[in-house]
Amino acid sequence: MQTFVFVAVALSVVCLAESRGDGLAGGLGRTKNATPQTQRLVDSVQGEIIGQLPLGYDREQPLQLTAVSYKDQVVAGMNYFIKVETGFNRYIHVRIYKDLRGDASVTSVQLEKTLSDPIEYF
Image 1 (cartoon, one colour):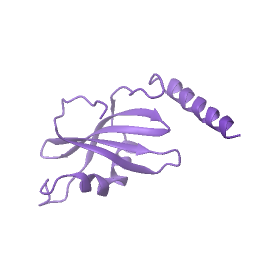
Image 2 (cartoon, helix red, strand yellow):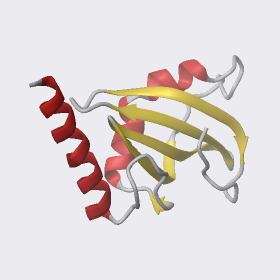
Image 3 (cartoon, one colour):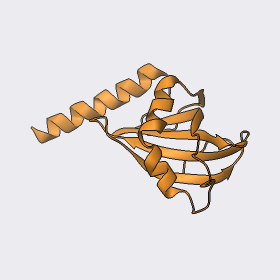
Image 4 (cartoon, helix red, strand yellow):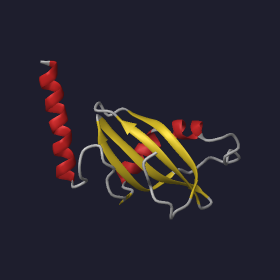
């Protein structure tokens, strides 16, 4: 029974990736403009993102985290690689994992990015 469930989930993930036009499951999708859903995802883990920033990183004022663009990756859930503007023309890249139940968590944050830096796997 467990094997059947695993195979069914795996096939569903592959079908989802194919239907979205993002390529194979596990591969990083194309860069897309941020959507309201992307911004809500960033907002939902804002505390985790700020917690991973070094001390003094714009701490004198509340950070405005604005999603700019993103790539996604189908895994057992979904990885989102999001370019986020933190204000004053400063950018970070944030990797957020959203599991199959819909729970999101920050996996990694990259600092000192620019608007023109491509979003890559990290």
